[in-house]
Length: 155
Image 1 (cartoon, rainbow, N blue to C red):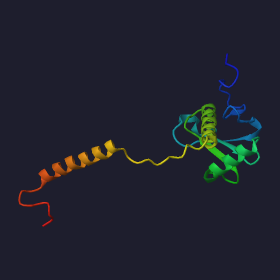
Image 2: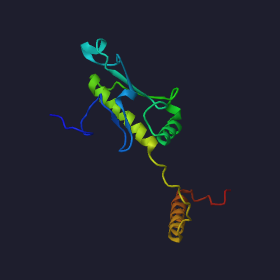
Image 3: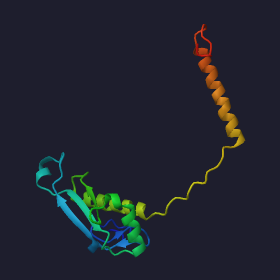
Image 4: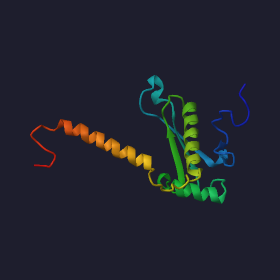
């Protein structure tokens, strides 16, 4: 018996992106085609390649989430539609599961808050001292590699 709720691996249900963002199954478009590559006798008879698409312009999202997704995923969108493809497996069901996971990962990354901006800091006195000591040690090693007749003056 399968567990109920978000833990259940349902390839046809709503798509749980975050706690606050759930895409209804009606907003997801599935396309199936024959996958290339190895597959034995069934390779030319089964539509195991899966393409999962969602039109972000018309999906059931809050306006703020929609704008964030459209802005952050602009390079991946074609007329507002985000698509992912899965053809890694010979099983259509596993490819459907994989496509759902890839779409969720893309949407979660795009919805994530921006990282905090870096505040530039000066190196500490100890870090400067260690850097200069390392440079001196490296210079000493290189000085040992010079031939005896040559000085360091660039003759």
